[in-house]
Amino acid sequence: MKVDNRITRSFTGGVRVLWLGVLSMSVILSGVLVTLVAQEDDWGDQRVVNIRQEPRHRTMHQDGDLYVIDVQINPGDMTLPHTHDSAIMYTFISNGDGPLGGRVASNTDYAKEDFTHQVSNDGTHLFRIIAFANYSSGERSITAGRPKGLTGEPELENEWFRSYRVELAPGEETAVQTHQHPSIIVQVGDGLTHVSRQDGITAELGAMGDWTWRDANSSYSVRNVGSEAVSIVINEGRR
Image (cartoon, rainbow, N blue to C red; front, side, top):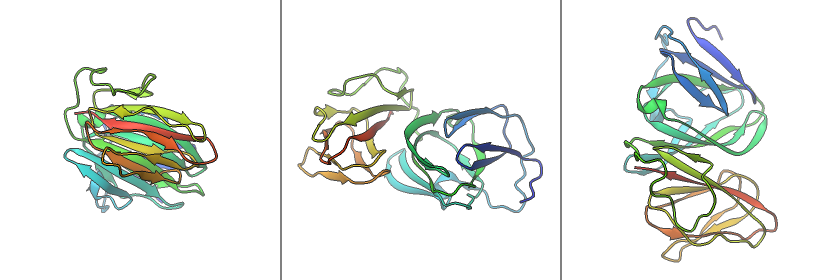
């Protein structure tokens, strides 16, 4: 593909990103921090869409100003140029090389300045992210409102997001935890987990990338009901 007036960066796992119209912005993708300089804002005849209208960025759940977006880019495929206009958190499920183990990262620069890019998967495996977009103004105090019943320090914490990683042995269950903010529980490896709910309904996660939503101020626990250790991440959308 011929590209003019663009910055192209290649990442491990065959992920390639094109940027335009960027003015000194730092971004994180697949755990790589890149600082960009100003470029001509011209995508030619390509249609530019908001991230929530990009076909490979599927909105799976909305709670007010919070969106869960399942990003799936097949090998050899490329997204449309799409614009980020909110803080966003990524749980990386896999890239073109294979599983990524649920590494988490976020970009809050998008809350201050819109950012348009295009992503391709030049690898041989599905590139998948469970993304969490937060269009609110966040919460000013970084450590305020931490959940009850969940021990350990967050793996990621800023005004818009908070993330914990939990490893459970077969048969192990977390304590009952209560989150002041809406949360999404993502299974990031093989295994089988049950996520309880206050009303007695249980969500079953049986594959890498499976997830379930819990409303603000709800209490729940997570139990490994499989025969092998399992890893999950619990991400909060702060507002």
